[in-house]
Amino acid sequence: DVKVTQSSRYLVKRTGEKVFLECVQDMDHENMFWYRQDPGLGLRLIYFSYDVKMKEKGDIPEGYSVSREKKERFSLILESASTNQTSMYLCASSSPTGTGNNSPLHFGNGTRLTVT
Amino acid sequence: GDSVTQMEGPVTLSEEAFLTINCTYTATGYPSLFWYVQYPGEGLQLLLKATKADDKGSNKGFEATYRKETTSFHLEKGSVQVSDSAVYFCAQRDNYGQNFVFGPGTRLSVLP
Image (tube, rainbow over all chains, first blue to last red; front, side, top):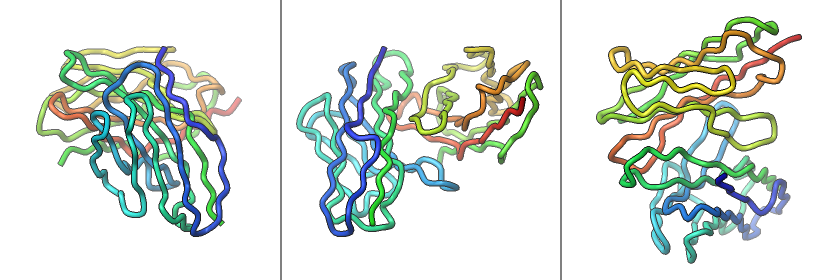
């Protein structure tokens, strides 16, 4: 079974702090994603990565950055946390489409971040 | 661009009732289609999938059939249980792309 592990379930940070959200997957997936989930807004893609050291902006990258130094780890960074970044953050991974099937996304359990 | 539309929730049913959650998609390519379920306080879990027209995905009593002619992938279950209370997301993935497009989610509450 694919396992995607997010380092924290709940996190409380202060405005202006630098915040790191960590995600690790154990299935050697090339693709990794960060989403945020807010009531009434569904899932919104922040950043994704197709390979080590590669990153692509999603729909709402402002205020965020990412790091992918190793294939299994994808970190989301809030450079200076703000209250409007209070949200549920979901990490996911998948195989690329070129592998001959359409691998689904596998999600972690999420990190609920509160910025005060 | 590609999109997924789901019926608005919340949906409230009594135990053992029949469930349908509608999902339609727009896509330029030939997507694979997925249903995910999210239980309270958890991430999304894959419920079922279908990769080509007329495929039927099924799992835990849930079914959905990939209908290319109507661009739909409706989720059904013959008899829901209280434990099925969750948020259900329909999603697509283009066969030529790497990203996924999600619907807004439909909250289901099943009452005993």
